[in-house]
Image 1 (cartoon, rainbow, N blue to C red):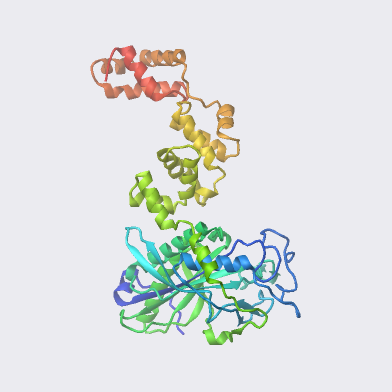
Image 2 (cartoon, helix red, strand yellow):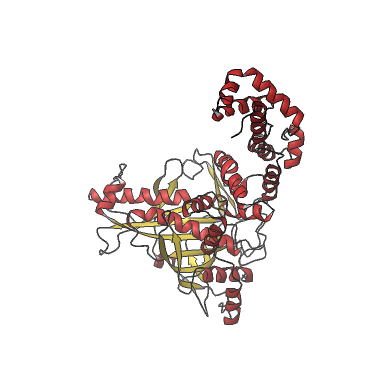
Length: 503
């Protein structure tokens, strides 16, 4: 096999080939116990302290299915417009990994609990693209390997490896799309939009926090190229465990360019797994990818089949929450914003924070202003989403209330938010500690106005002569004197009153 380091340009790649994608998303469920035993799933425990004979695969131990895990799988299937199996069972997926204590993974193979669904996703220009779902099935996570002594944290170059089985047995739902065709040059955008919408669905259902940065949701990006949309599928690569929306898009784009370079040069694509590198958006080879028959699936003999009662399934269906796209359209109309602004709010992860701020008493305009302005800027600087900032919607609503009451202006409000984010206390405590209230005493303001007029006689004469726009300079002088704590609107009124001018 020839190794190609050069990529074909994206435009040239799409001019010569048609991309086909398949996305496999693993969602870690937020259950209190593991999928097949009673061990805790709480994060942060000492390594190997949340294990038992069952999740360690010791001889004689028997698994029991987590009922909440089954319920969560059905909810996900229903939300993705899937059919729910009347009867399904688990299977053993056999392959060797050092972090697989049983040497097989309990999963589902040809009889998944949910199948044949779809998810409509909205692209940035408003186009709706339907992604068809092949299946959503239940399985368990593996343990975690820690490679010590290397420069990259990977096994290559490490002096030794440590294994933590606390994660072994954590409930997972794997959601597999059917081949995504017809996206053309927008394939990377479709991949990103699909994973983003799926994450919102999972969060709305309450079955997982779906935090990609914490590994609660991971995406495998399968990609192949073919000469024309009528051709047979090409050989695919599978970029594993991509853990951010941006990275999903970058991985798909890189693989399109890499495949195109290989094929255009007469090379052959190897069916393999690949590692994604966040620092430059590239991928590198992992291992040769097995086909399904290589895993030697067979029915799990220690677990009875799962047969969800139809009335239970319908009960769960009737209890589903409002789906994210429907909710966004409703909120967009209520808030009076356009599609582009709503997409920006979604991209910032601020929808729920804005809703909660409105529920805490702020009006929608003020809530959007602060979350999408000062707080979004702060989150971007820290490399987090806005709902990860150390400030609550109730605190943002309080800042908005202080502004509405005239006790803060926008400049002071930004300083209050800065103080809350720095851990200085509640908005009221920050105002008190920093002395940030608006100067509203008419005597103090009048004195500052008189001082500004006396110190800027030429500007005052221009205003008297009808050049009202020049008043901004005097307002600025007063704001400087009061350290930005004056009410600018009231200052302007006082200046014009003193000069005997009306607007």
